[in-house]
Length: 463
View 1: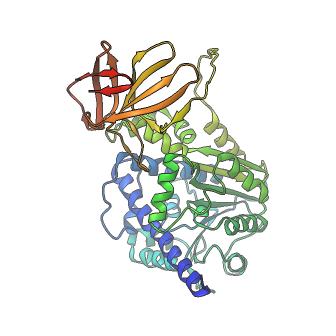
View 2: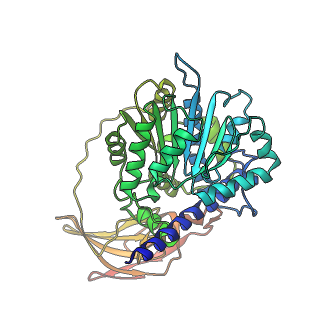
């Protein structure tokens, strides 16, 4: 590829990554319209009506918002013996509204905070225009003294807020503007925020950025929200989705796990790093809050929800242990509900599978027949992988299972039943199976049971 072609490809990818901002802000707006959160500023940044999103997507954006907002509030509670002044730098901020929300809270949350947002020049300029057009946003901006920008990268500047248009890959320009054209003080406690940003950059460039920012702000917290676990069916689907949008997840295979993310930030200079899944964040919410969101929408996609939560993490990297409120927050995330301990002894015997995809859940299975050395197994429905697609399953699958070496061999299938999740199979005899319950979607349960007639002859199945 020529240098011109490489440059064109890079520009195309940058435009596509910028486009994820527009999709994200619409999804956040849809989440708020559904009642999960309250943010009157979002309407200033959505140029069209927010389409209705599925309950699963709404919940995903809700828990992301909760994770970030809880972390921001914990940082703002921190205090030092010298000063209450702090700084927040939002990297790849897009049309995020956190500054405006925090500014209007009754406890004078940002009175001692300097807030900086950075994104591509085109995104930052669009945001400046939308802020200036919004009476609601200007009512926040105009409470502080405005300054005339001293650099072309500075799009908007006040005594409390600065909006910068800089490509995060250009660390030298970033450092120059930070030190000479903003009110940032390198010695103050600083929160560096990155929501689904680092993973769109080449890993070498994003690691260079993290390390450079840590050296600039030695008393800092780096909070990152992004995707992990690329190798299972959900992770492959997730990667395919972003690749189709021409905004590939460039960092996910280099830092695919919680441990890899932790080691990354330790290697770039941070001394304490915790990595939490969104499942851990959700579990830490109060019972009252969980009950509130349960009442908002009809929802029973529990497996999909848990799967999604395990594929997104919150990284909290600290330069030292002086951030006591963040330490308490991490403890609250990690606390699990008390359970009665039960001693269980299990032996796991790996199964040898032939022509079988085990990436499936929400399905049902039953034993058709069993002899001394072999059993016949029937499975149906659920959610899993079929021809490379992550989708609902409609096929009845028939397997033979060896009871001597635990091997599983696919024997055939039938399409006699439609897609169905969370139903049950009850064998009534060697030839009759009672199919009960299940649903196609949360709003479409199956009202009528089904009786299957089954015949197994010489390893072949007929229905």
